[in-house]
Length: 499
Image (tube, rainbow, N blue to C red; front, side):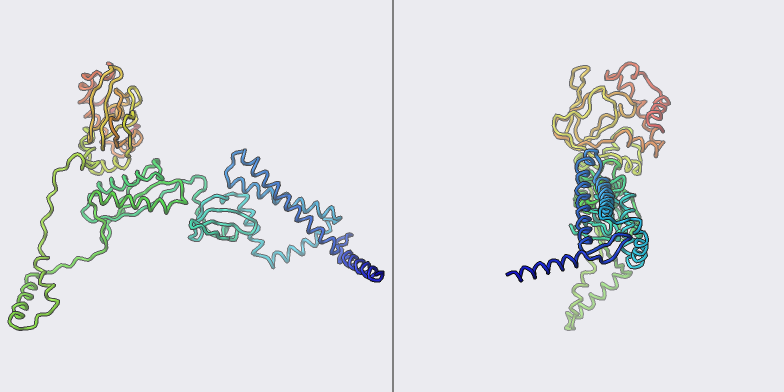
């Protein structure tokens, strides 16, 4: 047994001697296998501690400071790198290494690093650039090389992107320096989405505008401001080309929102009997009578015993198909079938507007649902909008006189006097049933009057004719009910709307 113990002791002595034997010297300090293992373990410990501290700072201090996710991730990553670097320096100094003696070694390693690891060095510098500049941050929705996704992590070598399909893509950091990148979340996440729509020739452009705007207003993910717009792109080969422009603040859901809007557009176009054409070609015959006579002669030959081609029976119907169908007679529109253009023309001040002017007004306004019993506007409130009743009904009440005035139904309007003259509301309006109102606000009307200054003259003329009627109602104060000439009203409108 003694000899076994002696051999074991001798083995461990030789092993310790081999581990403790200096392999090379760095300055005055020798490095053995045991010293190298110790340095590696301590360095890993320094990295772990730095990571724990940076995560603690991110979850406690940075969250309380109210910073967004991208800023928190960038700051915590930089803190982690700084602490890890300081930890490694302390470990090397604790091991007795003279850092000044590492200058030559660092230079040699740097040369090898530059030549042999160029890509890694480029990604390292690019990663630091991304973290410090913060033009791309964790949580941003970006597009790079036709790849759409959310930035999940930015490390020293690469950046992880989560696509809208749930896939994780690892992209080298150098790509973000060398490639044009679209950052949908940079500063302002709002972006404009274009939805092309083609309709058949002969369709009323104003009716198309109304249908597209109604579809846009029905989608809850579309922003009200900036308001949706409709552009008439041009005359295509088979259709009139329109484009609906909408604003969203969730760019990562752009495809989902487009799909929802397309469903709504299809419904609105079908509801208004607006045709969505498909590519087609028209065949015009210069002499259909001669061709029809030819087929009749062939048919007579067939009756005399001659063979009549099988395909001719289809062509024999040419005469009946070549006749021009009479246009369908359109019935008189009921209030339920009135378009917004029809309703706006019933408003005294817009009855002389052109289709172009009405299309702009339709584009600026929006629909809003008011449930039963909801107050639309209160007496003496500022007049900041006027309303057209699309469905349902409202009651007009005078709180000042404590009396019921009237009930307004589909196709009627209210609130235009206080909006145009800048006077307080003269009555309270409350819905008597669920009602959908078309709303035109002050800033939207201001845009129209700025673009169409002649419209202000038309409105001023109509207002000057209604002053006495308003006085007879007793709903305005005596000063504001004084007979006002046309010029004074026009100047008041110009001042109120800044035109």
